[in-house]
Length: 451
Image 1 (cartoon, one colour):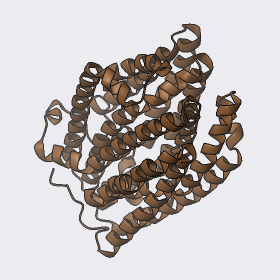
Image 2 (cartoon, one colour):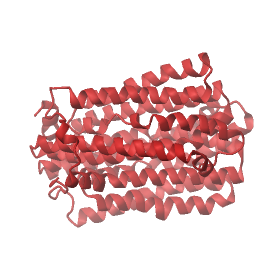
Image 3 (cartoon, rainbow, N blue to C red):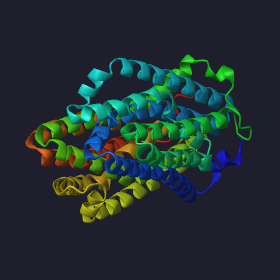
Image 4 (cartoon, rainbow, N blue to C red):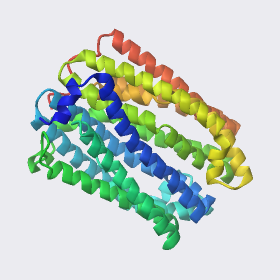
């Protein structure tokens, strides 16, 4: 086994968590920078209506991301626990089955979505001036769906943090270079933005194929036999990863509901404002995502190696880090809301709407990292049920009802609903974690290892 994997079970947990989280945070932070620059390129090169249209299509990206996360998280949990238990053959089979599941789901998504693109755009709220922009953007994204992941989670599962980071960084650099070239120089508009995104994803996918199928200095390599669907492995992948898929699907539904509520009560101005706020919020929460991602290989490996004290230590430090960061970034976003929104927009009415929205939404940023971290923690242990409660239960019981109820009162009600949803979801996640800990489920024999 490689030293990178060994370190997951031997290096002091604090330093190990700092190393993994700094790498994952850098990775997702770079992508967050791309999300912001992409919004700026579209806003400046095409216009605010096009940016609103791109945001309406965001659920398509979220849906593809949910599929990638499902097989990535499920596969990573199996890989890290298998390596911790000293079984690289099982790790290879889990990774190979993850690839096949994603490719099958991506091709199916492309075909069905393109066939029913008209109804899909209507469902997303693309009407009037935004519809053609949304159509042009969605067609290219869907055509490139098979490249929509680089499987960085599977790379992290064996402790290869540097290469996992490169899979993100190289792809984002390609996207940032392609966007201005395609939008401004070649005058391709939103098509150029979509082509830039797919181009970067294709580079990331190629890097992953080389890593898993050709790179030799690793604890395992994927063979052709590992690509054959293995029912127990597939069940474990889907069972462990399903909370991520359902959470991504729920987030997609939530985004659609927010867009529909804003279109009904505020029109194009607040839609454009939300488009900017959503990008800023995504960027602000990237380090919290990085902490959750950095925690998973540590928890999974040490659970597989039956080192529960290291698992508990990692969980405590991860929660502490995500809360401290959340409090700090929430304060900064509230203070600098107006210049942040003004960086993307120059229309006074839209800037005012965006500033109000961002200051309210920012209140939820303080605790926004807790629920995803708790859900990711249980997935790393192979315990899907509490992860379902956190990721799906909070969406269905808290976030969506809040948007449906408060969103009827106008844009301000929608902003309040988004912030309140994050805060209540965090509190619910802590309750689930406390109950599971008291029940003695933490540090038990890892589940799903029969695959």
